[in-house]
Length: 218
Image (cartoon, rainbow, N blue to C red):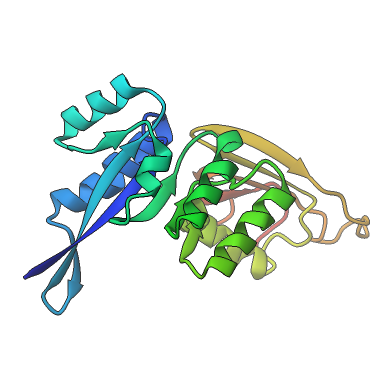
């Protein structure tokens, strides 16, 4: 079995999301399983290089998980040719400048969302990455959750009729976005409201990520 090591600069791992979701539950979990089997006798072994502003926090994390590499100097890490990938889980306001540096250094990019604080900033990063010819991606795990995929199937199938408002919630917070369309005639199934939440569907009795406010199933 041949092991290929990939060094990943992980910026922002002292934060909750960067630490829990990306370092512990992703990179370290892969290492605990012996690496990622690529087939053909080759295993991919991720080697994180922890990056952040607080030296004592980085040192403590590295010691806790048996890691050896950490730095508060992002420029020095990006100048290291053995580092192939740059991952960013910093606060959004600090992300654009760091990702631009990583793109300029020729690193492949994987970053938390949102990539910037405004649309133009996000589009600028996408253009730079495309022009540099590097691989780049944004964390979009939530849109692939089973509940949200089921919700999309119901919407695409016309189960709710015309949606007048939606409310989304998660363990980290909630938000409400309301959009109005021209009113449909009274008595039609078009005047329905869909609320997105983890619950038991009042129509089908099954547990999913949707609850329906009115009307009978189609």
